[in-house]
Image (cartoon, rainbow, N blue to C red):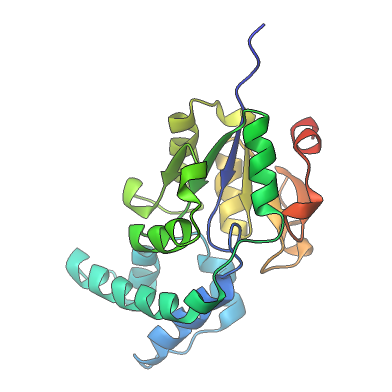
Length: 221
């Protein structure tokens, strides 16, 4: 009998790399320059996983055209990359987990709300892209999380049914997107405490980093 094909789908920011505080900091700086004060905790809870263009329109107005949004989003992302570059590294245990996954023939994907420039900055900057079967980002789907599009496209490209995918996330909107996609989720508490995810029935494990996780435990959950 042919073994069921399985996949790990990783959110990128806050999951592969512990960088969400830098994203929030750069958004706050971006909006402060425009006279708008943002509460950091509330902002993260309600926007992590959404695409930059969605956040800009929600905060600055739906009247902005695509070119205006693109210029503003590029400006914010430049601030982020300048802030985070000296700190860029993977979350503890990540490299070991994906090596084990490949040895077990588990497909590997990235599914992120990040634009291509940030995907390049992180995955290529850390020489990680070569490990993944597919990388899906903001340019590949029209809607960000909590819509399931980015996870479903990643699963499709890997040739794996949603029920055989495990998503790794750090944000409630991402876990909700996984739930809507019919996927189980592992939460990394890089940014929010475990209790922030208490209402999700698709969460199978909550960990501070990847070193606590094993392949067998994850797929037996």
